[in-house]
Image (cartoon, rainbow, N blue to C red):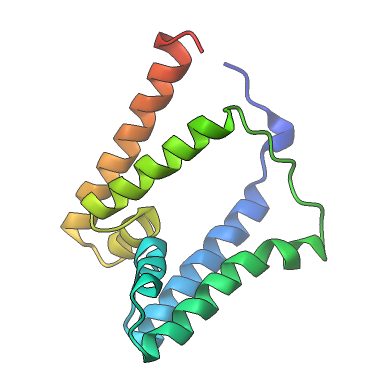
Length: 144
C-alpha cells in the first residue's frame, strides 16, 4: 500500500474538524438541537413552522461552504470511481440506513459520541464496520 503524501492535509483537516465540532456545539448549546444532517433534512420534508428557518439556514450553510472555500483556494478535484447508477444506489442505501439507524454519521458520530451516547457509539461502530467491509469486498474480493 502506498500513501499519497501530496494528498495528506493535516492542517486543513484539523481546521475542518474543529469547525464541524464548533458548529455542532453552537447548535446544541444555542437551540438544544443535534446537528444530524439526515434529521435536519428530514425535518424539512414535514415542516414544523419555527423549525423550518434554522433547518434551511443550516443546509444553505453546508451548500455555501464550497463557494466560500473557492474565495481562498481551489476546490479539490472530484474523481468518482463509480458510475452514476452505482452512486445513486449507494446514496439510496445510505438513506435507508439512516432511517433504520435513527440518524447519520454526523448525528451519531459527531454529536452522539460527544454526548457519550451508548446508542451512538454502537451506531458509529456499525457504520464504520459496514464501510470497512464494503471497501474490503469491493477492492479485494470482487476484483473491481
